[in-house]
Amino acid sequence: MIDVLGALRQGLAPHYTVEREVGAGGMARVYLAHERHPPRQVAIKVMNPEVSTPTFRERFIREVEVTSKLSHPNIVPILAADECLFVPDGPDGLCYYVMPYVEGESLRARLQRDKTLPLDEALHITFQVADGLSYAHAHGVIHRDVKPENILLSGRSALVADFGIARAVSAAGVQTLTDVGQPVGSPAYMSPEQLAGSRAIDARTDVYSLACVLYEMLVGQPPLLDVAEGSAPRHAALDHSLRAQRVGPRTARSITDAMSRALAAQPGARFASVDEFAARLQGAVVRPLGKGAWIPRIGVKASLLAGAAVVVLAAAGVVLFANRGRAIDPRRVVVTGFEDLTGDPALASLGHMAADWVTQELARSGAVEVVPAVESGHHLDMAAVEALARKTGAGTLVAGSYYKHGDSVRFQVQIIDAERGTVRHVLEPVGAPLRAPIDAAEVVRRRVAAAFDTLFAQAAGRSHP
Image (tube, rainbow, N blue to C red; front, top):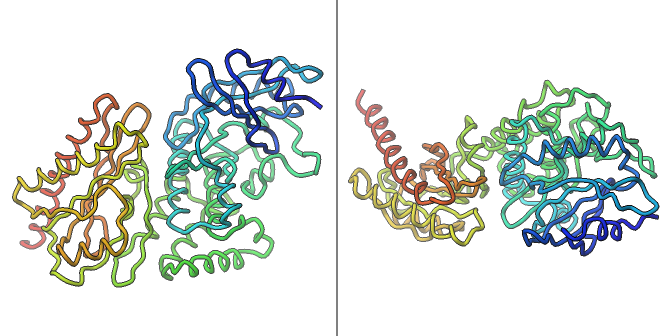
């Protein structure tokens, strides 16, 4: 038996100090290590010796070189990849790659603990994974192995790992059966064309796998377990889960329909892209609100907002209720502090600054009455929002969030009709270099003011034909 840990410690010194094994899967093991220069904690994923054939090693390095160029907030980046040539009594080398050590846990660990997740959290994870996959697809990279084990949860972020590994295994012709006779990979999340061994794999394969992951987050098991019985049990299990969460029948039906299409056996019957799948799910949960209405609290990346034909109410984590007290006036506006999704203390005050500038600009215009928000920059619970509506009668809410994207910071901002519970306007994503984040706040100020001018001009036009 090969001492992989010992081989790594000797083969990767002095650049890395390999500490211990922290995870294992069907084809690889993960080790916690410390990189000397620059000094940081990293995770080193090592392919099992029996996988590391000469053909595989060549293909592995080629695939990792491609995926290492991916840079997105929802993708675990690859820092380095190579062969560790010092393997006593073993093959010529072990394939490995280095990635940042992500504090948190995998989605698999979360599901093992909690079995299922609330709809709002499941969709939050799905949208973030979709954002990462969409970016990869735009750069010609298909994941091929989307599953809970490859989704890492850190704070409120979901990150996709292991891009290119499944393709390297397939292209190198590695034996597809393990010692226990199960396919290498994850059959429960594989599309039918993958299971059939087709080489015609495109983005719709990842759509199918992502739908399997969402299904498991809601139901507690992947949908493949229901396939033998046809579509009815699949619908029944999903409907039961949504009813248990008190999701309205119209919303539940829309979600089930979206899932059924994403899980279609034929690729041509599925959504053409993960963006399209995410947009349909977003449309399912955006509904006019009344007493007791339910809308999840979801953080959605700006690229999805910009590309979707639907509007997203919950991107700022806000639940709205129809006002039951003071008469609602659409020209009475509340500006909330934009939610900080950067995780960077240096940017913690940026959202409050942007909200203040927007408030000042709207007040200066005289076109609207701006009232102060009760809370700023955080999720507002139901009681707080209902009290805010009753107290202020504000018919319009400006809300949003900001996050890091490569070397820039980006804002996503929405103008929300509080009475109807719909989004009146979604601003195009606003970005600025990290070295000058205030520039983004300035652009947000101008664009929100311009959006209000346009919205009220349109309203005036409709009132006076």
